[in-house]
Image 1 (tube, one colour):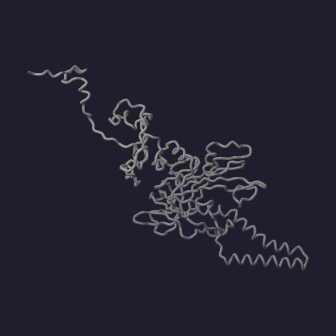
Image 2 (cartoon, helix red, strand yellow):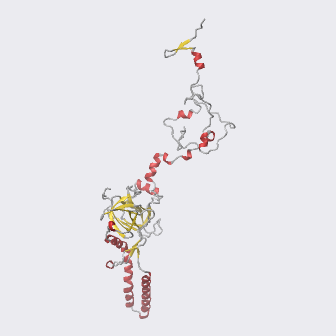
Image 3 (cartoon, helix red, strand yellow):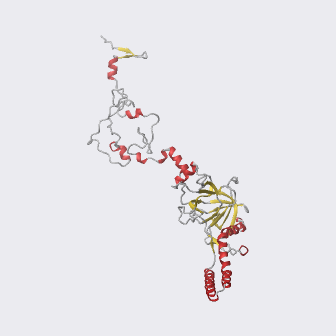
Length: 427
């Protein structure tokens, strides 16, 4: 006699054997799982994860883990059924909305970026808004490949030491003899004779101090341009042509002019009677330098004479004497005290005060495509044509027609007469 096997119909219309209550009780779980100890966010209790970062791991068999907090969002009786909503650690995951933040190690966590033991390792690039703002307002800093120049180009007089001592001895003897004769003879004619001898010497010294720099620029402008095609190794030449940036283009610090080979930003302040100045050498009733930033890097110049291109080695701490006239971009006077936000930000980034001072901000640059004259020594190395600074100071010689003594300057001479507001040659 056969026994009838009970059956029931599913919601889809399919008939299956067995009673409905028995089917639910005897159903096996589709995914096996094991109990995972609750770590409470401590990486030392996380087993293999702690070993990845060389952190001592506690022995799970000898340590008792804290009980996990109950999940208020759990809707199933199985504590570890594989569902995200029913897990013991699902409370913090359900509270977060949107994509989960990633740590620098790639570990997905439920807390905010920077929380937990690995928060101290996060990179500064995670905060996008602060990094963009810092890139716009912070002070520009270059590596060793860019040369940081001083305040002013030093222009000296090249006179032999013997001649200098001879002139000083003659002047001293003339003053002593004139004073003795004036006391003995008691006539003013002796004083006039001494002044006639000493006066021209003093006037000549003052003339050279005032016009020495301008005389050097005149010497550079009159120097004949050389052709790079016929220049030999070690020859001192002057090359005029269009410049292009090297591997490190520069940017002016205030106006943010891109792709420059030379940039300078200088802040001047006026000191009146009894005024305070940051520079102790600043004289009264004159403009003095308060802050200076000058940078130059390696660049290329295309010779107008031959069309050849040479690498100008101006970076890596080379001695460079730039003669580039800057323009005034900010002028703060007593009647104009309203400072622009950009200027205030520029001062704050350099820890400069913005109190009641009469200031001027001048900025100069040589942009890519400008016409530049370079004076240096030719070097040829493995079919690479270079212009390097001279090891000896460059002297102008005596300029008798201008009553100028020999002046000299050290390093690579760099001049540009292009107007900074004018268009440059596109390269």
